[in-house]
Structure formats: structure tokens, C-alpha cells
Image (cartoon, rainbow, N blue to C red):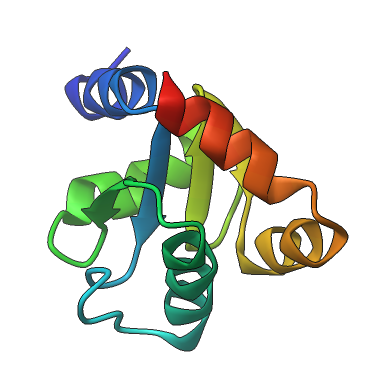
Length: 106
């Protein structure tokens, strides 16, 4: 496994709630990332993030790691949840909040 894939694996495994996004939670650089951040912030739980715009290697290799082509990508407890559309759907159905809260509680 390449160094960048090892780095991604380590990030995913060491952060219970991790969002790969364009920009930062304070300054999202695309609408999909902004909407996903708003959902997560609404739960009031901490989450980690990686700005893929600041790390071209991760931006180029994460789709291979996750088998998901677009950003943002939300991982909970090491598993890919999905991108913005899936996050929005799971938020509306009430599925996402308990997952985030349980992961954030450790």
C-alpha cells in the first residue's frame, strides 16, 4: 500500500467521525461540503476533518481507498457513510445523528 493510502487508513481508523471535505468547517469551499458540515455541526459533537484542497495526494487517492468518487466523504468508526446526498438523506430520516453521537462518545 502506498504511503498516502496508509495515511488515509490511519486517519480513518484514528478519528471516530471524519469528514474529507473541500475547505474547512469554518470556511467550506463547495456547497456540498458546506451542507455536510452544517448537518454535523447541528449535532453539537466534535468531528475531525481533512481539507482535500490542501492535500492533493489525499484528494487524488481517497476515491481509490473509499471506492467513492466525489467529495465530501464522511467516515464513522472507520466506515464510509457516503457523500453529501447520503448524509442529507440520513439526517432527514434520523439515522445519522445516533451514529455520530455514539461514535463521538467513543
